[in-house]
Image (cartoon, rainbow over all chains, first blue to last red; front, side):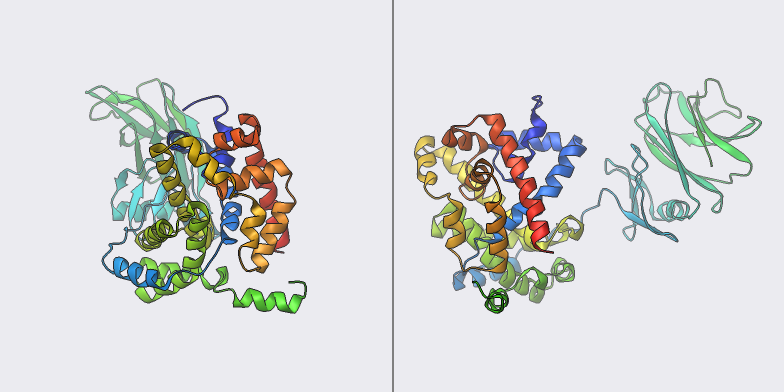
Length: 235
Length: 200
């Protein structure tokens, strides 16, 4: 449902005052509308306070029935959250690298991107977190020529950079994306191959000042084939 | 409740309030702790049942839906996120949604106009607040609802307690759709700000 005034439905939605179809349509809209999601979150508590005034004594028989049903009801497992706080020495840091939201589940040991796909194993996850949690970790974000976005989070202390690619076009067979670490004299060394939606840890920054991205033949190249479709500063 | 001491006593006597249900109780429930759940039941069931009863009117249907909601609170305890609000707010959101689902289903199955007419009489907020024991919390809500414009208040209470959709509210109040939607939203913003101020 994409009527022009769909945003105006947030109040009615929070009050559960939409029809079944409107509610379904609005929830689809909500998924992509940050302003509406914020609106809804801010008004939910006030609406719940409206609910508290109607409290009344519960028939005693209900408790026994509920406890019996609960005893035979399996609980849902914990969800994988959208954004996780990563503890750094500065205290908690919420990491959401702009559109390329890198999310990590501390404890569960699974790295997921904003579309909830598993992109790394437990060990790789721990390695990524080590970089992200560094006090000198700096994030740079940019568009990729030809489509998509790239985010890099670099830490000199960890001597590593996390690269996140999001929404790049899939390449035909026989071609691959390749990362480069480039120094101030534009000398580039290979830093690994990547696919269109991926997160990767690159170690050994050395004298690099930028991360670059090109399209290469499958198997990669030893030096970049122009054009450089993304170049992000490594602070 | 004009004397402050009586009001405090009343606030204490009124079952468990939100302070009983800190997030660590819910984490215990989320780990399958039945004793913790029984405490959550005692604290939440009166509010859940009361709200459902207010919306559905029918006592046995209300018990049925209350049972559903209380079991759902157990089942989805791991989904409760303290960052998003209080346990009570979370529980009442589930409760209200389930009650409204029933209302909408009933409307689909029966004569729409008859259902709308039956609900019309039961939505005045004065009736709602007077029907229960006066509590500090209820007083705050009553005061803050009172600070809204008539259209804001009626739009909100007819929807929330009366179970009407915004289109039905517009029809019943003889107002236009855009106006009702906007009053619901700005009324809730005002209510939120007022409740925030009242609890300081």
